[in-house]
Amino acid sequence: MIEQHYGGKDGFWKFLMDRDNEGCLLGCSIKGNGKVGQLMIDGTNTGLILNHAYGINDIMEITDKEDPKRPLRIMRLRNPWGHTEWEGAWSENSKEFAKYESVIQEYVDDLAPDERFPLRSNDGTFFMHYSDWKEIFSTLFLNIDFPEDWTGVRFDSAWTSVNSGGLPNTYTKDVLERYAKNPQFLIRPKDDMTMMFSMTQTGGRLPLINSNPDHPRNMTYYSYPFNETLLYANVALFRLPFGQRYLTAFDKDKLVSISPIKRERENSCRVKLLGGETYVIVPSCEIAGNTGKVFLSIYFNQMFRDVEVKRVFHPLDTNEAKDEVLPYFIPEEAEKSGACPTWKLELVRAMLPYMITDEDKGAPMDSSDG
Image (tube, rainbow, N blue to C red):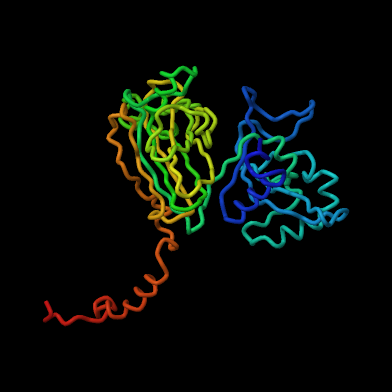
C-alpha cells in the first residue's frame, strides 16, 4: 500500500527524508487494537509501548562498511518519558550498534549542542532500522511546514440536517445521489499542481466552558476516543466533467482520492491535479443525518490568483450553516515572506527613509508644535 501511494519501493523513504529536511515535526505510534502495555513479538518484549506517541528526531543514511553503495537507512526516535527504549536491532545493546558505534558517535558529535546526547544512557533516545520501523509502527504523525511558495486556505463548514448526506451503504441511485448533498468545495487550477487537503473536526481535548456547574471552573472534559465530539467520517476528491460545477452523485469513476473512514480529528490526502480541470472535495460523515462542525484546509504549490477555490452548493444544500463561498487565508501560511514579491520589499525599503519622521527617530520634539 505504501509503495503504491509514494512511487515505488523507495518512495516512502524519500518522502520521509524530504519532510525531515524541510524541518517538519514527525512522530509515530503503534495501535494496540485493544491491547495495552509493551509490544511483544514472538513472546519477546520489544521495549516499545502500545498506543504511545514517539518523536522522530532524525532520518538519515549512513555508509555500510560491507556495502558502501547501499547506505543504511536509520531513524532516531525518542520516548518522551525519557526512558524505556527499543530493544531490537540497532538498540544500544545490539550487535548492529556495537559494529557501528564509532559512526554513530561521530553523528552525535556533529549535532547541534542542544541536540547531543550520551550513548548507552537509557534516556529515551534510540535508533531503529527503517525496515523495522515500517513493519512495527502503524501511525505516522506529520506536521508539515509547507515551502514559502505554497498557499494555504481554509473553510469553516458544518454537516447540518439538510446537507449531511452520509456515505453510500448501497449502490442504489437514491443513496448515491444523497451523498452529493454533503458540503462541496470546488478546485480548478490554472496549471498542474500538487495539493494537500485536510478535513478536521472539533477536537475532544478542549473542555466545554460553562457546561458543568459541579466542576471548579465550570467545564466538561471528555475522554478518548471523544465520542461526544468526533464522528466517523472521511474526505474524498472527485474530478468533474467539463462544464460541471458540483458533484451530482457519488461516482467511483470520477474518484481521484479518498481517505479512510475513521473517528479522528483529522483526515488528509495529498494529490496531483491537472491544470484546467475541475475538482470537488467532499467531506462526509459515515452515517447520513449526523451533524457537527467540519473544517477544510487546502494547501497547494500555486499562487492563490491562479487557482479557483470556492464553496459550491448542490441544489438540495440550502447552506443552513451559512458557509462563506470564499475561503480565508491560513494565518501561518499568509505570514510567510515568500507571499510578498521581491520588488515590493525593495520598494518599501527604498521608501522607508522618506517615511520616517523625527518623532519616529526619537528626536526631541518642540512643545510649541502642539
